[in-house]
Image (cartoon, rainbow, N blue to C red):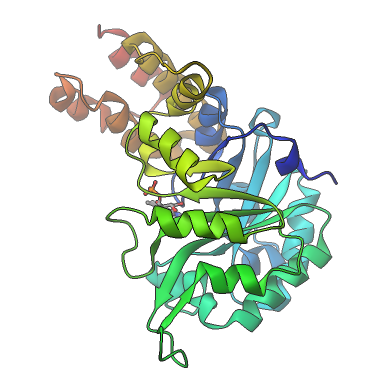
Length: 324
Ligand SMILES: Cc1cc2nc3c(=O)[nH]c(=O)nc-3n(C[C@H](O)[C@H](O)[C@H](O)COP(=O)(O)O)c2cc1C
């Protein structure tokens, strides 16, 4: 299987895996607006090992989303061979492994970022996965995890330890969130560490992630770190067109503001994709996206009241088509 990461034009504009957000509908929307590669929500390697139908349902995708990368999490090495084979059989283009999640239900059980405390297991997970699939394997992590026992002088495991541990394996991409375990989602990212990590990682493309500010700052962060690309996350909520705006700015030095008709069409299209994929019950997830799409409108407060109870794409159309 070819390494699609190598074929992408740089800088690569990607989105990160986000549980509860990056489902098939969201990925289709991001792709429509110019994402070069999309990631699934993280899925448990254990669940795939045991053929969980619920997890397989989460991995349904449309051809228009490709290249799709499935992100796996889990701390048991023996779960990865079968999980990797199941993922490969789905026809997606890549497998990513999560070494960055700080959430209690993952890190609290020694998974996600807490796996960095046990680099031997990290190495085994990555080596086993690479050996079990022809798909390119990438990893996602953070710049550091503090208070690691047995490391008294620095008290820290860093992205450099991770890069060193994986240096003799053909890891095809690394996505690094420029925050630590201790400051999981707030504050600025450490661009200096990201720049040094990019220089240290030799086997594939290096993508930076975290704390999107403006289109202009994305471009200057890419220049500063010399990264091969950027993976966007929460900044995309209600504004998936950032991909096009960033690409336009990179190519021409300017970009257009989004218009209401474009916002409305995107929200309606998103609603249809979601209904098609998840049906009436799953459609309720659309409500949170709709609130983001109308954020910033002067009538947002009254609109929210109507949008939090929509049950169908047609109801969304009816509300949004009435607005200027
Ligand atoms: C709701 C939510 C769900 C997330 N789920 C995942 C996940 O499944 N896998 C993962 O690697 N990171 C996950 N993350 C972390 C993001 O991918 C990203 O690294 C983080 O939000 C930092 O980027 P930002 O500051 O641009 O949002 C999640 C973040 C949020 C807010």
